[in-house]
Image (cartoon, one colour):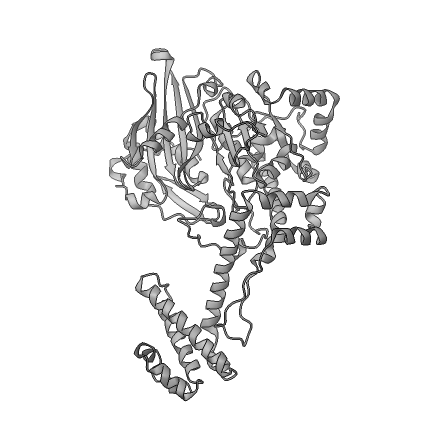
Length: 619
């Protein structure tokens, strides 16, 4: 979304930002300036004095294109670009930086120009929100200066709190951002607490509404970025699935950050635990650790997006290298997402379809076969002399490219407007396929998230059955015996159990599995609580023997004590009072069938006696 021409800063419309409300979306706004003598400088931030010294350093070095990518565009008077980065804040928490960078060439200035960046820092990977917001605040800042920051912050602070997985309408001046936020199961836990995740997110099932995102970066231009590497997408999907380290090289920060975002989006709805850095520089503290790895030491699971070709030498033992994108075209247009619309496939011509035959002929013709062999022999270091789109890996994929999907992709021709429209269509085709592929891959784990509700006529106060226990070796033996299912068996080679084995050993499985189990257990507790509210215990107590009645009494008393503690701590739900009264009635119902001597013993406790007022009315 581009900035509305009528959007302006009017003093009478200025809203004083509410910092607590603002913090639900934005950590801070930063203005960075590149000074020829002092380097990167934080000119101002809002709210002020919020960044630690280390955070300020991280933001400084990540907010500007490096010198290599700056040479890719022409010497036009103004060049704008949008990209984003991610860095570790503490422990498992990250900050995302969304950057609007402007380079202004002016021969009257030192070294012929200057550059500044407007940066939005957030704890959330809400690219669908912050990219269009940057297209408003970036040009506005360069039009009116610092007052634009506080003005936009005021509007953001009026937004309702983010609701993951929902379509939200967010007013900004006279514009309205309509955005889908990523679903709860794709986001990191907030201080170890689960988001409100629906039961449907537990079991691997395909969603009925494809417009609703199922993972991070649903808005990334998958087709535009990987158009020249479509046959390699299935290999890249596997590499991310099993958590292999990947280095992505692109000419510019917008292209490399978009390429990383696209790759992360491929594994939806799987929660991605791989450390991904959309724009990674040599100044990142993590680089020193990577550069100090001894020969033979494995790289940690990560996806690094870089533009500096020095990484090809410094990290030459990185097992998987992907080169994407093309040098910037002669344009200062800021795209919504960094589409490589100009990088048309050779041989595309005016064909209406981008079929697999076209792709296959290009790949396996004698000339291209020789070029592919030469590219593989030269290795990624050949990018030092000329940028080419390629994948270097020794990994042999289990999944075969789906020819039916490739044949459905549409080649739009040279018109930028039509190109963008067709890219949206192609993105939907590709995203739907990989969503289906990942969902079917995860489907065999579904039984381990199966919840059980109390059967009709049974007591909802007995202990719920535990979820099925998981053993990796037993799972693989069982899966190998029964098969992987029709969908995957047609698309995978016979060694598909190896992919499951590597997935179980990789970094994505345990966090995803434990979280799905936690959601399943949470759902099971909810179902049993609903059953306790609906069940008439008087109909069940008449069938209980003495031991069952005593156990039920103890269980109900335990739930009452938990409810009391919740209410005292302020954590009770809206229906807390109704729940308490229902538990109290159930306690009285069970009490009424206990032997007289046991009743007298229980009533000797004053606190318990207050819960058992007039139990005779239920007899």
